[in-house]
Length: 85
Image (cartoon, rainbow, N blue to C red; front, side):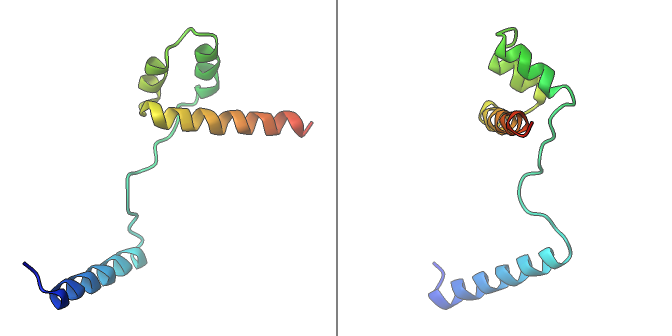
């Protein structure tokens, strides 16, 4: 079992290491996934029920929950474009 002061030392070293890595430009976390160029076409096919959400996600190489987020962002972006005309 670690003592409280040992745990604090570990946390401090870890924070220093993270700060040094960020200064070197290291990016933490999962890399961002990019959507395929034909996302709007796939989206339309999904809306017309020609694709299931599972197939849509598989083609885009992302999970369904992430796809729903991307769909929401895309729909919001499209509604902004329509209202700006």
